[in-house]
Amino acid sequence: QVQLVESGGGLVQAGGSLRLACAASGRTFSSYAMGWFRQAPGKEREFVAAISRSGGRTGCADSVKGRFTISRDNAKNTVYLQMNNLKPEDTAVYYCAAANTYYSGSSHDEYDYWGQGTQVTVSS
Image (cartoon, rainbow, N blue to C red; front, side, top):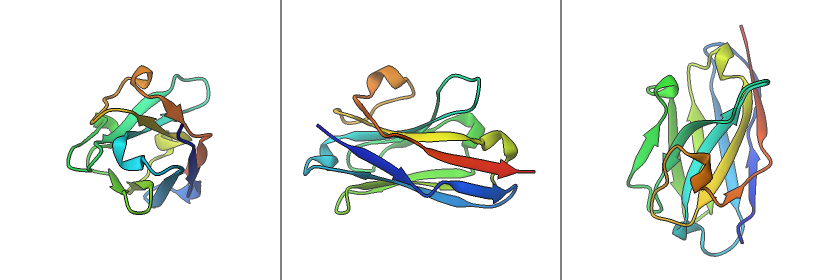
């Protein structure tokens, strides 16, 4: 069982930056691939970024490429999402997720555990 708690969301102006963090419980964090997803009002949950167990492999959605970076610190049981040059269309609730595999992709069905989410609002 893995419990995930996101933090770092908030209100920011367009062009600004935020860093989200997701703290995981348990001693097996390094066994899990991690991902970030987001859901805007009235829209389906969408993939943002993913990272492998060791952090050696990452992937992200085209919409955030060059602006968002996923990373992890296995010693701290934490995965991060650095978000730069934020746009109003990035406004959403951001969720982290864990998958008991080396690397998981963009489908939310591949993930086993989810956090409660953190709100990110980007004003124009």
